[in-house]
Amino acid sequence: MTAIASPERRATRHLDVAGLAQAGACALMAVVVTALLFAISPLDGTLGFGLVAYALFLTAYAGVLTLTIGPLKRNDCLATVIIASVALLTFVPLVLILGFVVLKGVPGLTNAFFTQTMETVGPLDPPDVGGARHAIVGTLQQVGIAVLISVPFGVLTAVFLSEFAGRRVARVIRFLVDAMSGIPSIVAGLFIYTLFVLRLGHGFSGLNAGLALSVLMLPTVTRTAEEVLALVPGSLREAALALGAPDWRMVVRVVLPTARTGLITAVVLGVARVAGETAPLLMTALGSDGMNTNPFEGQQSSLPLFVFKLIRNPLEGQVTRAWAGALVLIAIVLVLFTVARLAAARLRRETR
Image (cartoon, rainbow, N blue to C red; front, side, top):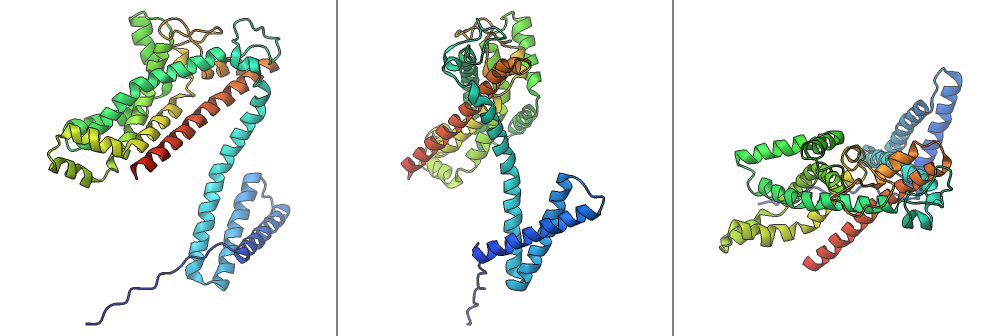
């Protein structure tokens, strides 16, 4: 019996000096030709120039690759170029936004910004007077309340949806979670305002703000945690059940520990979803210029409210403080992401 030989694997072309030279020459040619076209025709606009130049570049690069390496490897190179272009197109706006916020916010990052409040600051005071200490404390407390509420409910809901997916009630719950994902943030604020501030008469407070943020955070944590739990191999569940473990012990001792790195990511994504929300806080915490460390009573500020209030001010000092608040808010989210990644990497090393 004659053995069937496996087909030879086709290796993709690696990026080398010759490939870079070809791509650079094609790009230069595309820019020159596009400039000539725009000079002798009524075509105009930066966006149009970029699209025409990119189309010419791909056409020229495809022709060069066909002549040098053949049509098969040409497709690999073209796919690599297109994917890299899309990735760059996505990365550039992020870098521009971060760079712009850093450029505007760094002048306002003084010692007073982290140690003082805006309670005694006048509109004409320089940026080195007054700060956002009260807003930073308010943000941490409100987001912390949202985490304490959303994470347990979100993870438990995700466990139910993952382990009992075939039940009718699971389909109903999944539909409700998907519907909650599309709720505008202002609707969550209106819900908490109507129920707790008006009906129950609790007044504005950081607790109400945390409740509104938890409404927005819950579907993000639930959906992400469900996807993570679905990645746990079914063989682990079957092995635990075969050893006589009940369902709850199998979930607690096998499923959740296996998916803990992904669950940490779910929590961080939920925090990132709500950390910059402003609309629900306007109707639940309202904001304050002074320090309020009691989230259960009284108006409380936060970094989004701090930025929203000061950025509308025409005075330069107030606008500088607003940009500094935006920079600190971004830094908090980045720190959370970094801590989550480090914790996930440590847990991954421990499980090996």
